[in-house]
Image (cartoon, rainbow, N blue to C red; front, side, top):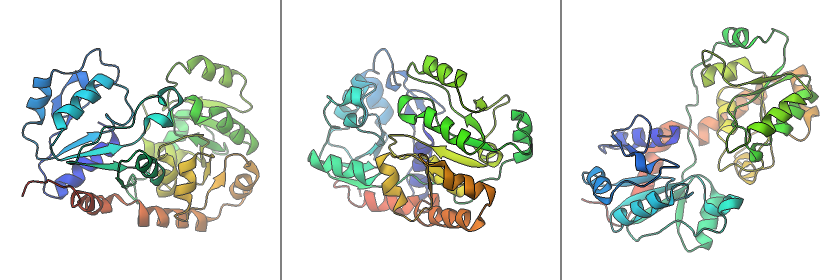
Length: 329
C-alpha cells in the first residue's frame, strides 16, 4: 500500500469509516497477490467479491488509472460496478508514452473520480469523466532527521555540499540533469532510489562519467527520509514528468531549498506561492547556498502547511464523499 493510500485510509477512519485494506502486496488486511503489478493472473471474481463484500465504499488506488495490471483493473471495475467507489488517479495512460494508446479509466454513475492535480482533472474532463482534485498531503512539521549521523554514514564531510535527488532512476527523472546541477554548485550528487524499468545500464554509464562525486542509495542500514533531507544541503527534482512529485513539498516541510525541473504539474504547484530554483540554471541556487536565506525556507514551509497539510485531508475527502450519488444512509 502506498504512502498516500495509507494517509487516505487514516483520513477515512477519522471520518468514522471502518477501513479494510486490500492489495496485491504489502502490509494490508487482505492480501490478494493477483492485484499486484506484474501478477501472472488476477484474483478470481469470488476472491475479490469476498474481500470487498463488507465494504460500503471502495477506494481504488490507481489500479484502474495506469493499467499496469489490466486484467485485475478490468475485474475490479466489474465488481465495483453500481456500488459507491472512489477512483484515486495518480497517473493516466496517455501520460506515459508506451501506454498512450490505451483508453481512459472506466466510469460508472456510482463512482467519484479523484486526481492529484488539476491537469489530470482537466484531461479526464476531455474524455467525459468528471473528477475532483485532492492534492497529496504531508506532515507540515515532520520528524527531524539526524544530519550528523546520516552524513557520517554516507562518508560526507562537514564541508561537503550534498545535493539530494530523492527519486528513482528512470528516463523521466533526468538523473543527468541532477548530476549537472550538483556539479555546477560544487556539490556531491546523491540519488536516493534505485534504477527501474531497465535503466540500470544507463545509470551506470552516467555514474562512470559523472561531473561530480556520486552517492547512490539509502546506505546500510537504510537512512530514513527525514535523515536524508537533514543530511543534504539542497534538493533537486529535475524530472520532465511527475504526476505530483512529492519532493516538491517534502523539501519545503524539511526546510531545504529545491531546484525543480520543467514538468507541467510543477508549474501548477508553483502557483501556490513556492519559491523554487530552476534545475536548469544552477547560479541562483549556488548563490543561495553561499549565503543561505532562512526566510525562503520558512516561506516554503508555510505554503506547504497551508495548502498541503495532511490534517486537512479528512475534510477534503468529506467534500468528495458528499458528491457520491449513492452512499448508504
